[in-house]
Length: 143
Ligand code: ZN
Image (cartoon, rainbow, N blue to C red; front, side, top):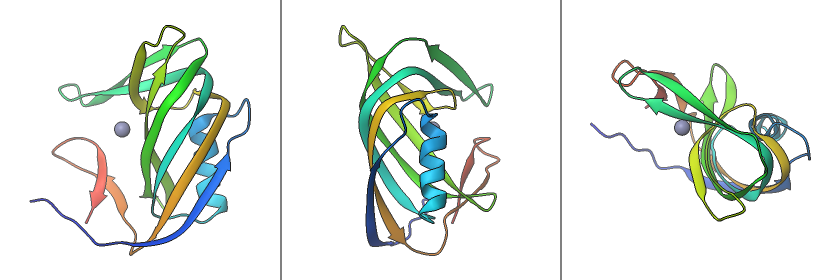
């Protein structure tokens, strides 16, 4: 059965990631520094290179694709919740190349920032905690 909780909007944090930083690490450390335990993130910008995951539902593991070239971040969207006691950003991106082709997937470590501006809407609520889910093999919210 589906589970939902009402959450209350709190502050909004806006900022930019460091040029040359790992995009996922930049977001995770921003969340730790700002003590963001629950939120929604969006962003735009560009990356020097990218590594995206695709969850193979049969194999129950992520397959990774690397893109070793500059790409636009046409869209970055995701959420922040708690996993193993730390803020955990779960982020998906759509990236586009010089011809306008788009690629998308689960943002993985190894995606290097050229420039990226993010907005995080913080929510107040009891923690959403990720735990291993037997049905999917994924770390999903235990609500
Ligand atoms: Zn994902």
